[in-house]
Image (cartoon, rainbow over all chains, first blue to last red; front, side, top):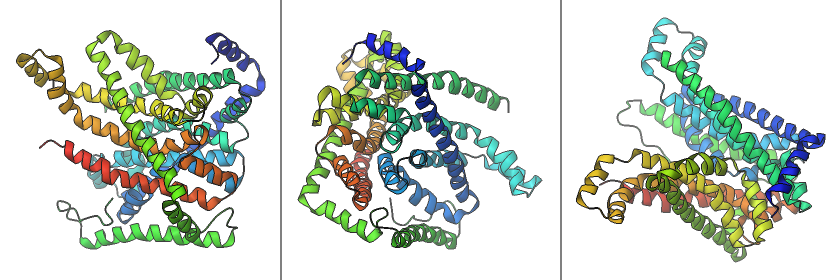
Length: 220
Length: 263
């Protein structure tokens, strides 16, 4: 158990060394890619029962509970067997964990959708794409935002595990190296960076954004 | 999860649509298994075992006493961790209520810190601090679950009906009496929700916590299977967790929730 001082020194060293910063960048790339992919997949899967009501049971009662209870580490270990140790494995594992969160959130938003506004829009236009773009998506904004926010929080935790077992770059990989060398200060530095990063994004990006969004919604 | 959803009485959708809906749900399951089977035919069993091989391994997991021991140990750890973390979360949530001075410490320091602390970080640190033991596995699980319980119970405390508590105060000044007769029963739905969430999250992270800091449990079975490239065992242990998780929810959590429902 190293004291705060050696950890602080390692923390400063971390940012002066290029290869460490690259690991941080790679983790970010993994996470952002996975969030984007899972957001698109989740949105499509959540909208499917909305347009094709016979897929409701398939999505809500089969696919989502299954994905939701399948563990992230299981996806990682399987992905390693399937694709080997590379970036794709990491992104795949994170995406599979994030998809159910996105589906659940957007489905919730669709349930809460104001049916009267929808009906009104139908009396103006029969164009489904137009309704989606002008009515459905805007009223889903809070839920889309919430799903990205949750995805971001969850993805960090999953990314570390995925990189640890299935990656050759990223903070998780670094953590694994540090673990093998019993380099406890480095382990603490990596954890500290993640805690600081997640907290500040939550505090300085998502919270102000949410306030803007809430103000915007209040004006409608 | 009921196998067939009953038609909603208020919602007068025709029964034809309801049947098609349920049918498609099953078609998806069967289609997924068939698709899996056809893919596994052309790929080596080491990479992608078929449903039959995985099914056999799954049955083996639940019959072979060696594996049953591992499953039981994991289950006991999960239940223990859920109980401890609900109690701990409850204490942390109640602290600012009794001592307002601790509000910022708990809500703005401890909560975000625990919430953003990565689970693998706990797992690795626990092994370094406590070695491989039951204690280190449960420590990891409790550390991850506590913030979830704290968030839920704090919400519950905010929603408490202050008038009822005031009424309680006008009957008695005994703090313990008010807590056990009024606060706790009012909090019950939130406690159940916290248990439900903690239970779900705990099974997911049980694997992570056991991969590093345990000598037995499902996580160890899985890691061993992965290092020996036994893909069907990796699959089976994941499915085993899904099955145990659902059984636990049906047999323990749902009856508990029913008990706690207001009469």
